[in-house]
Image (cartoon, rainbow, N blue to C red; front, side, top):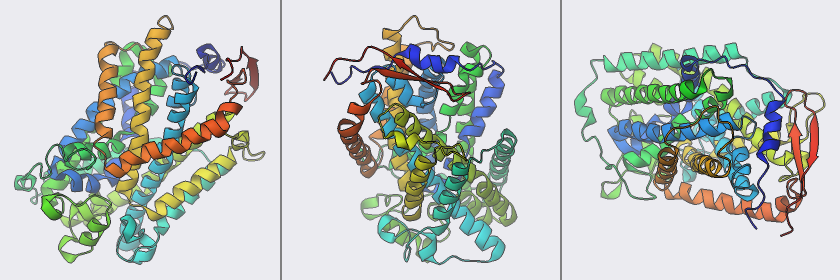
Length: 526
């Protein structure tokens, strides 16, 4: 049977029981943690791509994406509090729907994290080239060093995005040698990000340049641009969804939260609502001051974000100041309305904050690889730990190279859409996991038990599917194509070498690093 290999939940939880976590976080603290996790790359980087898809309807897109995230967050919270171990949605699926579907989730998470890291690297490059090099040093990188090829949606004369390549490799090197972020540094970066965006909102909404007529037409591409088109408010929501990724880190803190039944939903929903309102205000400030209408192609349909056609239009003098053509949208807006100094400060904030996001994304991706390798589904050599650095150096180097290549040649909007395809599938499977475990293991202790699960989880399933089919058709196609490669690897390699398939469950002491191989009754032969 294809779905017969379900990893015993007791064995998975044995890992978590080897460590003791104190419940110290209040609901307010959890909400602040969520705000810090969510506010980052998407709002700094994807504002331009979202406006090209929806125009002023970008504000509605943030609300749609936020609503889907809220119901998905509640599903994540229940299962994360119940199974507080490494592996995220991959581990949750292994304990509920079996090894094969868990493999597909892990494979999708690899797509999500690696491509997202590439997208953030490209976004960082825009602020580095525009603010640090151009504004402060007067250096204008030639097109062939600052953008990917035009055929891939880069820029006329583009060949390689060198800054994006370099930052991805630099962060990879830091991860390999074991450099980690401190909580204090993270707190400072969160403060910088929130302060910068608050200043942006205050300056744009009170600017003499702000004019409500710039919101008309509000939905130039409609609410629905058509399935697979990636345009309209819903198409923009499918892209802007990237701006909310990070809340799943909040759900994993459920084990350390006081009164999780009350504080987890407060922290999750509170942080997502705050970020949604924050994002809508940022979009309103940007569009109300310099406009945010998309550049229309034949038939009055916006050129696809990240396309060769849009790149050609943005190279024309008529669109040089357009929001939808900017590589550093928010700093660009402030410069356009006479706040160049503050715009440069915002550019510096993005320059400082975004590398930490790249680090977290590459770190998360390597740990998914690591856990799958430890389960025997990928070559165990990948989970080898460097004797000096004490990090999984092989898989980190492999991941970093893939991230760097993606960042060097592809535009940010396209990369975000590809990453979202993997993310939406993982969130979909978390909702499935919640429903399956409610039926198969109803008596299991749940520190956070979601009310209305038979309403919330199906809403999550529908919301994820809804956003997925409104991605551009290229991004829709990426997931099954990537999945087909993964399925082939699973049947050619992973299924026969799986520890669970061979009757072995591995329990890992995450503090001491000791491993215990626990024999179980092996499943029947295929």
